[in-house]
Length: 378
Image 1 (cartoon, one colour):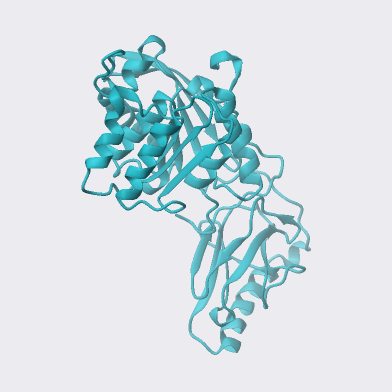
Image 2: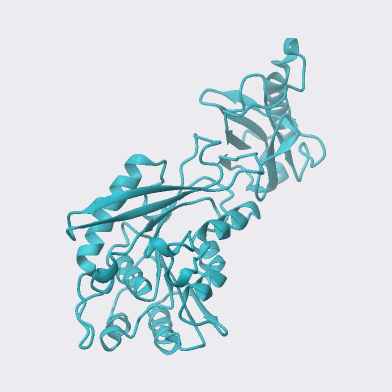
């Protein structure tokens, strides 16, 4: 665990904690109310270091921090009267090193848990799992995982998960189709540091090569066949997800789990999430092959009488990229009650075409929509 310089003499190291308690109590007394807003910062500073809090309203300020109080589990707590209203805050180590990313918003009377990291140099890291066997499909493939910047620095934190198809195209040009990668890690690192995207674990699932079309499609297109997506769906839900949840610090609920892909991978993402909203609460569908089997999936949505409780991002480029079929799907979703900018994000990529370069160029849009910066814990 990385430690930071101690800014106060050792014989005074307990004073910040006492001061934090007194400041919180004083704020309550002066506010004349029994309720308080509270920030809980989950972070192990290392012995002799402390967490301070700066913010937008008194008793906080952006120039000098107020000391939080350490509690069991390496949780640093600071409270103030809720009479001052909503407050933007940010934790610092030793009132010197700011947390990375955007400010946190604490609403009046709320208790907010945050899991910051402070090393500006931290970037996401990649881990590879080879020979990952699918009993549902009878074959093996590679998983490649992106662990976000704070993963090693703050072991108290758990993360949402984005599962992505065509894993070999996501992170490495050497393994990508046509030698062009999606730059998922570069996109995520920049958005996280800029405070517009939440930290997430990304699980890239390599496709099965010659079996890709079969695994990513419902049954059955007159020209191409297909029909294996139900088995692939069970592979994701019964094998991949349990492995990831057991071996990494995930938030496994539906609201923190998404599925994303492009082309046939976009089709598969939409299809699987629509069938399993209790597992995947979000879908990112880029340049989706909604043409499959005479547009059977858009037709299915058009005749549906109920709204699936999930969020959908769908897009297409203007250059031979299935825009007509994607617009039809947008219209079907709107008719079912989905709202643009709410549980639906429909995007037209001007000049965009059906390739990795186009998907990489606009990947930042679905990443921010599916996993926006969270100022509170899940």
